[in-house]
Length: 287
Image (cartoon, rainbow, N blue to C red; front, top):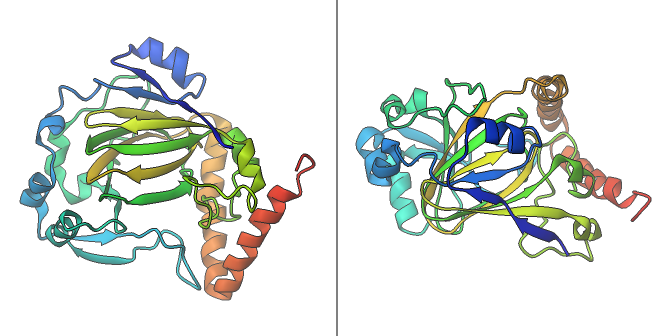
């Protein structure tokens, strides 16, 4: 059985305490009051976003695996923001806004928050938002840029499963992707089909309105939405040589090869990689 413990929670923390106890050890943390003085904590809502950019057309993503020659993380559809919000309010649970660049799309939102002084050099040109409805899920994955991430959450509760990079050998990582097998249900794992999952030790984070989750570089995460909510990610790009080289490899090499091979081989490429994901895990000596 996957063993879970809860992510550490603090009301507040000093920069020195964060760097020494969490950043240095690459340990996730929930900070309850980091955003309490932001206007965003009081103002942000679907109605507020719609009043600023309701007619703006936004790309939407679903949870279905990419098939044939469709690129990973390609948008499923697009529509005006107000139409998407109407779908959410009507019960839409699959379509999500993903990596929505606040500064490019709704610059006025920049006045509603501030980058905290926590000893990280945030890339201030790239605060991005994620939006989903009740029942929405995000496949188990890790972020390709190996950034330190402050995930600032608003709206209804969101749940996050987290696994450290050291547990990658048992994650059924699909080659040339940044995801685990889409067929794995991490909420109800099939241990007969995927026995290595029973070796995993993870963390669970429950995020409520105003909470900020620190996610260290390379951590796997799986997200579920209890109801309509939205989170903004602040990113500090890697400075360690090891993580910087991983980021460059992911962006320059891995993603490029994946795109080329999908175009050339289509579903054969996808099937090959999914098969390798299972064989690689099950060929370990201790299996």
